[in-house]
Length: 583
Image (tube, rainbow, N blue to C red; front, top):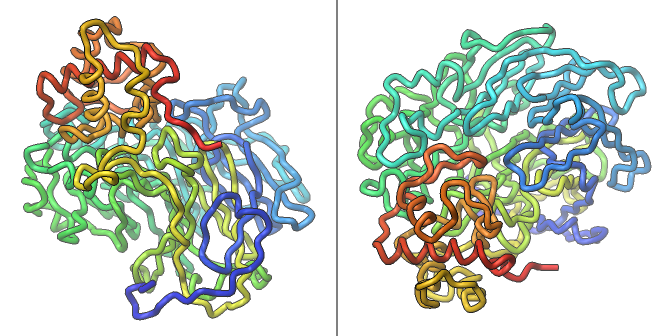
């Protein structure tokens, strides 16, 4: 596979891997073991010099199931018999009965574990010989904002002891009405004083309090992956904004909506502004352009974006980069599992997976490798690990979603999953340390529908399977329900219902389960559901995604009635909207 620098990947000798690589597809020469499983919604990780892996887990509205272990959200894992699987598991940190909800961010520094917990970053000192800290944690920073669309606090710690923490935006694009069609952006966006950027604190000080004064860099909507390269340069990934088509249909087609904007990797510079919310990166023109909320005209006008800092690498839209680590091996990394030298200095990025590519196919749900050279992309990225999602790439139905990354002292790469709490340990067994970077074989899965494609590719894989068995509301024909299903799946009018509610209507972190029969915005009657769809939901009661009127598309009266009838039918036919699942 061409890498953009003239080199071509060559296959290494495929080793005999134990098991099935935990369900992953990897390049030739690489093997994976399931290092741990079922530990909770595993987010970010770090590995100590003795090989102990520390993991932060999270509980919150983003997950369908929240049944955390009673003994703390932080997990220490150790493999004492070198079989690639943790045989020691210890929990520490705040417990659910103490008000803990866990978190995302975690790092090691100065003989201690630093971890996000609710609105704080905590420090847990490690004593000699301990796997899990026994000492009580102390507060390093408190008062970090928890409201809005991005309440997570991922962070990295520099060798100088600087904590660089992401405070993701509370809104999509600093709109007057968040995620509502045609809503202009605030002028100025005062949200940037406390959100949408990177803040800096001192890892050696206790009881620091959040304030706008510690802002290090601005204009980063959601920088979940923060990492340092071998030269000490700091980088962050950026989740691009959502709903260009849904909120501005006169300016963006459905296809443009799921192809823009690009996800980004930026080099962090003190005082830098990376564009959000006024700008986004257009992957076609390869530059920052003005957002429609701030006078943009659909990717033509640049305006003030000419003065903002652009990315060093870009990736497909809405893939959701949730973590990043540079492959920088340590002194011990010379063992059999270390990667070929071509990976040294490059970046691995975990893509959590999209929801906002409907009615096109969802994407991400993988780990990519981005070659780097002198702080910039050194070639095209390749998909390094795939197969996490299983049969369906959707947030509500994916079997696993990559969320965290860490490189061990022996050169092994750890990957976490925040659906079922699985952690993989990936090593190289190909025997050729000169092997070039290579992509994983494509993993088989369904990725939804694409209006631009002809059947069978252009219809949803589950379309029509359950319509015949659904209970009908009074006065509605089976043909109308069939039309409603096509609207729901994006095959009519470019509707994006399945992006939020899942193609099986069972819900996702963004939108509620329509098959539950619970209705929060009406009495659940056909007229009530129709009215909710027509007016939208500007301020959701239980989920993270606001719904624009008509879902952000233009529906005829017949299409509106049909999709409302379909929602009524799946809500009154328990289990009927679910397609067959893989065993």
